[in-house]
Image (cartoon, rainbow, N blue to C red):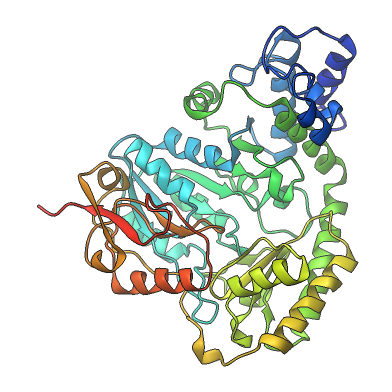
Length: 484
């Protein structure tokens, strides 16, 4: 079989040809290659706006691709080891939701870990599927949810043999991976589809000595955030599909929610990023791993902090670890992760990915340099020296196992009322509450509000966590199901 020419970038090449044609635009977008909005052209650049164009025959159409977009998608599929790939321009949120909508209809069961991204739970609101949560183990020190254990999944499948699919994170935001090969084998033996949220795992397909990727493990669908570790523009993503997936039906599902005005800036960035990773991926991610290991060594030498890595692996709840993730436990210095996050930005001009109540995450990529790592390490050392306090003052729990009363759709669309947070105890929540990032719900629609959850929300707010998902933007009130 002839090896694909990964040096090609069909959509990008078509865009270059189109620019040379000097076509006069009497279509949308209305800025007309930037001429209609000089300030925007000045800000983004004329070259950028000159290719912010509408779908047309020379450039294909993402909703029904038959030429250059289809060629670019097929090259991406071959590069990632998939049967098919779909360019996504509504973010990986849309990719995750499309996976769930493909696998499940109203009333169908889907097995998933509770520490999923909000997009998966929101997909259940849309399609009416019923979640069967496999509550992950929690690292008592770090306060974070771990992976999906094979034993817990086996129990869930035995109790729910009629489930249609299993959804897995690979990896979690913190870098933790489950035993994906065994999960796939177990689910497939019961004719269940395996869906993988691989938002933080694009590099698994190209780096060496990485945790196993979804496609290599035999999963059916995987949502891959190319804009995170893959180098494409923000909001661009790829949905990968295995041989068992009906390509035409999958495209129809995607088109239920994806825009009909797909951005050629986003799509061409996917095409070019795929080309770059296909050719230089091993070299790129070797450098990222080297930077991450250097950073961990330097941070751990400071004292009190813990930049954790493969030492977490236990073969069960943590089957593998993504060493590109620079996850750092900060409570050893008595400082909440969200506080360190704010200090780094406000006092040191360093923007990291996120801070939760106990950890921070610095997202590393090929764009980082050793001098950037040294600046981060120096700032963390200074924060420890100047802000260190008693460890006993910190909130110790990050993940709280839920009490599920109704499906997310039943609760979200049910008869509801808004009550003060303190009065919501024991009621069924009708919305989602989360710190973003990482976007893992503290409380989801259909779950019972407990004292532990109320205390967590109050503490997170006091530490400056960005709370989202609720109708009341201050998260002082919650929508709960009306009592009969």
